[in-house]
Amino acid sequence: MSGAAYSLLLLQDTISHQLRYNWMTYHTMAFILKLMKRSPVSRVYTLGLDFGTQSVKTIVLNVHTAEVVYTDSFEYDSFLPQYGTHRGVLPEKSLEIRHTSPFMIIEALDMAFARLQASGVEIEHIKVVKIDAMQHCTVYADSSFRERLSALDPEGDLLHQLQPCITRKTSPIWEDRSTIEEVDYLTNTLEKNGAIQFLTGNKAELRFPAAQILKWARQCPGEYSQTEHIFLLSAFLSSILAGNIAPVDTGDGWGTNLNNVDINNPGWSDIVISAADRYLRRLGLESPIRGRLGEIANYDTVLGFISPYFSKKYGICSEAIVLAGTGDNPATLLGCGGHTMVSLGSSYTVNGVMEDITPSSIGGYNVFGYIPGSAMALTVFTNGAKVHEYFMEQYAQRIRFTKEVEKDWEAYVSAAGEAILNDNEKLMLPYLLDESVPIRPRGIIRDGFEERDGNFNIRALHISQALSLRLHSLHLSHTDEICVVGGAAGNRFLRQLIADVFEARTYTIKHAGFAACLGCAISGAKVLLQIPYEEAANRYVQADKTSQMGSLRENKSAIRTLLHRYEELERSTTT
Ligand code: XUL
Image (cartoon, rainbow, N blue to C red; front, side, top):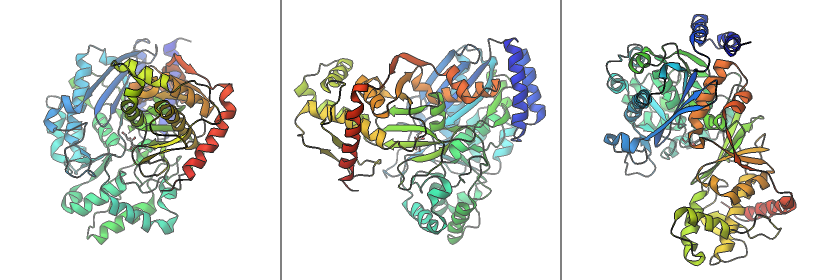
């Protein structure tokens, strides 16, 4: 059977599958069949777009050759300087308030397509588009939004056509911490209903939309009442792409504190929404949240064809389909192959599939939806690579690093010593800043050694961080393969330690900096070819073969002892 015929057969399956979700009509899917028939087999592309906190990243994937044919990224601060953001965030006196501009993001959507068009990529071969966005960010629109979407004029731009319907002029993002009052209300009022974490998968979080929406309604009741649609950023952008009101998927919808935890029947939690509406009524507001949130759908639900605005203006195929958008964390997990992933940035995160959906009773991790029928857990350790940077500065004189940055880091990692471990390794609690996992106040605690000894400190930091990653990931279902990404993924010693503590094969991937949008492009390929997610991940995620590492047998017994010692050390300190 030819590749094209095979794709067509698979697409027939897609039709019946998608019809179950009612988002696409039979008519629409029949168009896709025609579309695939017309496409030369080697030229079917999918497009993934990632709207992060600081930048937009774009990737185009050739579905048949598995080649990434285009990557692009641009930062809001330098490419849209008129908004005056710093690292994507609007200036604000209060440290607790962290907002972005929805107008800037709307402009950025046009800009991403304009850059793609200007790049010379054969944009007409793009057959599926999907976006992901920073989680928890919300955008608010009035009742004219739907009509404006259906009437977008390609002669104009998105900003001028959509600006008038945005009811909240700034959008709170995941860094916002200004909702203590609302989080307390949700936590206390839902205690008797089995606690919010069991109703929604997560304890009431300052950054999640439930608290953010209530706070805004309290402070700006007039604008709130004029709002007809409250979107997660991913659903807002997907609505523009599809030219119609889009649902949020479980990947992003589970980061709201308003969702239910029935992964097979995505929806909102009646109990939580009623509690939120009671809060509004007490403020004298008779405009309930219920009804303003739209719907929650499965991961990768097909929304329909791309809006004519994008086909006419940028030349994207008019029959390209749009998938429901998602959060950056689920997209990154798929873009890294679906295996547990450790991201070693200034904070460290561990992100992996959670088969048995178990919310953390102490809030040690967040639970979000993932591919249909699955959930994932995300843990964020505040003290990640920042502590290495601090040690690098502190001990540079004593260990005499060179001036060249790369060589400095090589010397720094060598100062940590050999990969072989023993039971008596020095350990530390490396809390340069207040730590979130476990919750502890700042302060570095050294177990039986002094601050002045650079080599001991550097080695203890590496080992202790790896032990902590392991101890706080016991809820994950599969940790035998771990994809390691982020700036510190180049640190071989740390990667070896991660392989040892998890007894796992670790690897890095090509295009690691684009993992989230790659995850979106892979979803596109999965839907077109109707192959299982695992197969799509194996096909399109390219492990960097030179980076693969396994655990060292020699370290097995020492690791057991060290995990125990580290756990005791952590327990000896309290919140
Ligand atoms: C997850 C979270 C962050 C953002 C970053 O809960 O707040 O990872 O998604 O964009």
